[in-house]
Image 1 (cartoon, helix red, strand yellow):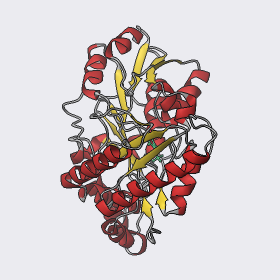
Image 2: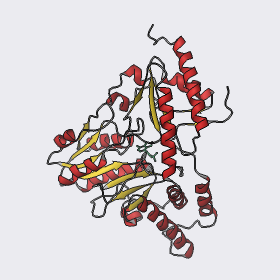
Image 3: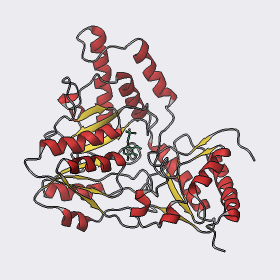
Image 4: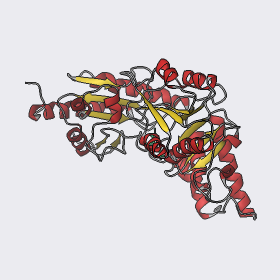
Length: 385
Ligand code: PLP
C-alpha cells in the first residue's frame, strides 16, 4: 500500500502554519506594515496589533502583558533568560543549575557561560527523564543564582514537575527559568501559581510562523539585555519587532483548543500501544507524564536512520532525535541520560503528532512501521540470532 499523502509526524521539529494564522498575518505584510516604534498612524496601528498579541500570549499563561517580551524564537528566549540573569546577578553568585536533558539552546548557552567564569551543575535524570528534587536541593550553593529546567522534553516528551522545582527555588531565593517551547498550549502553565521567573516560548511549534517567540519575565526580575540597540521590548530585546510574526503567534495561541489535546493523546496512545506490540521495542520517557503528541520508541536491532529513510519512502516523516542533532550520527544526549544504551538509542524514532493528525494517518503508520521493522530486522547485522 503506497500512501499518496505525506503523513507528517515530526511536529516537535516544527508544525504547519494554520490557515487562520496565515490569514491573520497577510494584511500585516501588505497593508498594516508599520514599524511599531513609529509615531504616525501606521506605526501606532502596528503597536496596537502587537500589544493585542502580547495580551493573548500573557493570558494563556496567566501573566500580565508587561511580563511578555517578544523574541525571534525559543533559542533567543533561552539565551536572554540564561545570559541576562547571569550578567545582571553576578554580584550575587556565579552558579547555575540545569539538567543533562535540556535542549542545545540551554546546554550550549551554559557552556558559553562556563567560558565566562560561571559554574554550571548539570543534574542527572531518572529513567523517565525526571530530575530528582533531593539532587536539586543538594546542588544548590550560596552562589546559585539560577535554575533552568525545561517543562517538557523535546525528544522523549517527559513533563517535569515545575511546581515543585519552583517551590525549591523560591525557598532559596533563586531565579527559576523553564523552557516551555514544547509544552506551550499543550500543558497548562499558570505563571501566578507556579514560582517561575522566566518562561521561553516559540510560535513555530504550535502552528505559528518560524522566527518568533516570547520570554515571560516576572515583574521585578533583574535581567540584563544581551544585545545592544534601541529601547524595544522593555529595553531587554532591541530590534524592530516582527509584527506579522507576532500577530501570527497570537492567532496560533487563540485557536489552540483543549479538545485537540485530548484527541492527540488518544491517537498517541493508540500509536504507542500498537508499536509496542512489535517484539523488542520500548517506549522512552514517562508513560503518563508525557506530552500529548510524543511517542518516542526504540526498535531494538534496527538502525534508526534506515527506518527513517524507509518510512520517508512511504510518505511518513519522523525524526530519530531532536531536529538539531539528527544531522549528526551521535546518540542522543537525552536517551543516553535516561540510560538507553548507545545501540538502542540509535534505533529510536520520535513520532510527534499535531492537531491535524488523523486516525487514518496513525493506522497507516502502525502498519508500515511494523512491515519496515520486520524487513529491516531480516537483514540487520544487529539482530539477535
Ligand atoms: N527549546 C526546546 C525544548 C525546543 O524543542 C526548541 C526547538 O526545537 C527550542 C528550544 C528552540 O526553539 P526555536 O526553534 O524557536 O529557536
